[in-house]
Amino acid sequence: MRKNIIAGNWKMNKTFQESVDLIHNLNDGIDQGSLTDKRIMVAPTFVNLYPSLLESKDSPVEVIAQNLHEEDSGAFTGEVAAPMLTAMDVKTVILGHSERRTLFNESPELLAKKVDKALEHDLEVIFCIGETLKIRKTENHYLEIAGQVRKSLFHLRAEQWKNIIIAYEPVWAIGTGLTATPEQAEEMHQFIRRIIEKKYSSEVAESTSILYGGSVKPNNAEEIFSQPDVDGGLVGGASLNAEDFLAIINSI
Image (tube, rainbow, N blue to C red):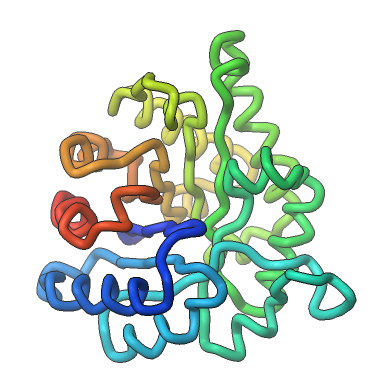
């Protein structure tokens, strides 16, 4: 049975001490008795990964990475490789985030290589997919989402999907003033699950966690997470504040 997952993507935020303090506050506020079917993750910047891992030792908070390079090593200034992450005991990495796609021009083909590299090193992948406002307005959002999944993930063997988590980001509803309704979130999550089922099996589809990544906040989290195909959230800004993030964690 798939677990609910609340993952905080801290992006390029928080200093060394701020990262440690936030994890400390989360540890103090999390009701560990409620975690039997729930996982809590945070993704600090690369420079704050190690101190965050030390602070989260023996706690329910899993520290994960925001990205990795598709090669194990080499002349790639500023990049981070999978063996560097696993050497620190990082177990999960976010790939394909909308900001990586748009700001850093990461293509579906490149992301497929990154997924392969992560799985080669036994890293779990939170793979982000989503459509822009332009695509949503043309009503080609289903084709876009299916294409992103197919081009980057459908080369995998069925057994590899045990290490894949999907995060659906309606890019059109992030920072635009528009809002995706819980029904719209469920509609897309259900569609994603069905295309996985069609390619693989109902067993693979039903065991894959699909997270919602569209501006989750304390005042909308409970309604979004109540949808049957929504298995938690990839949280941005609200994960930078312990009180807000705890409220989201407790809403599922």
